[in-house]
Length: 311
Image (cartoon, rainbow, N blue to C red; front, top):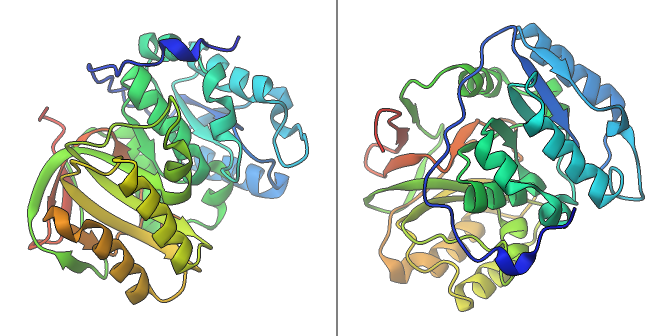
């Protein structure tokens, strides 16, 4: 059932941290966006099973409707069903691509609020992460999808296992960090595929970014397009009040120095810390990080840390 968009004007203030899972628990896989390669899918299942998890997925997960993995309603039903199924303890998206935004009106946010579960995805799936955070208060995880686990590096796989199983304090240090603007910041962390975030602007699902730390990443976007997206969001006021910026991977987006200049030009008037070089996004490594959890960004130490005992 499609939700009434006129009621989506509130932001759920109480954060819902899902419980961690243990080897032997069941991870459900859903397909909210594009169709995918079955070999990559089953290879991803093998990775999860090697970690000790059981895996479950719906029969229609391989459905195709053009560039989408089935109809909008059916893809949303997969997500809703996974949250309502008591035998599933965590959920991971099969693939990004395109389509997550289309199913946002069909997601049962009250169901998710009442049944918070660990939910992981990235790229196009960040539309779901933002909507669940806004309307359900769900603390989710920005990280690999099932079909990218096959080629994931050791650091990425270790971060996925930790995301699923541990609520210990976490600190991330970029392998090749670049400090673009100095400073320290604390606020809830949000991670965005830049294109997806831009397309949420002006919709009922537009996130509130004030007092947050935002990590952005993308793939295959020319520098002028990155400039255009950041300019549009800036003109719309979406970026107002951010307290810190992290820059993930920008694969096939031209020279990184040019990308850095564009990003810095967007944020230099805000006098907030900007740290680049995070292995988050479409690069060879895609570290799983909490989405919506309170974080601390320090450009001097070049760290992004999370204290799970904090607020």
